[in-house]
Structures are given as C-alpha cells and as structure tokens.
Length: 128
Image: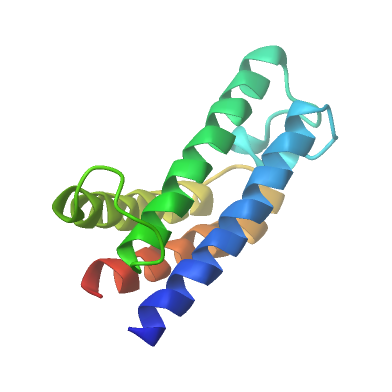
C-alpha cells in the first residue's frame, strides 16, 4: 500500500506542476513550444482555453490518484475509480507517444518523459 500512496503523491505533484505550467500558458508565458504541438511561443486564445480545460482535468486526475490510494473517498465508487485509473494509465501512455512524435523538440524532450512517468504511476495505482 505504501507504494500506491507514494505513486499517488508523486502523480499529484507532477500534475500540480503541469497545472502551473498550463496556468502560465493561459497567462501568456512564451512557453508554447512545449505544449499543444509546439507551434506557438505564446498560445492563441483557442489553445489557452484548452490549457484551462487541462487544469480542470489535472485536478480530476489528481483526485483519482488520491482516491485510488485510499487517501480520499472515491468520487463515484471504487470500481469507477479503478476503471478511470486504468483509463489514465492508457491516456498518459498515448500522451507519451504523441509527445514523442511531436515536431517540437522542446515538447519531445520535456513532455515525453513527464507523460511516461505519469503512465507508470497510474499503472502502479491501477494495479494497487
């Protein structure tokens, strides 16, 4: 159980960092080369909206990690939480692949390993 709790804490820390990164993008920080395909230094309005949605989703993802580690009550029930953790393991695996094939070198170098680590953490949470 300790490894599941550690996985949840690390996942939440990474997701918090990603949330801060997305908030910086929303605010106009010139970090767009590491997100959304890396086509813009400063994100246009439509991608800033996508970043805002990402922040909300990261909150849900973090809550799922905590619930799966029994550090928070499940939002729906334990079965739904377990299924969603598996979905997130797949989602982050796909994210690692998509970031890995990005045309943006900064996105490949930074976001690919982040997504891969999250995939492994959610796999640990799913198996726990």
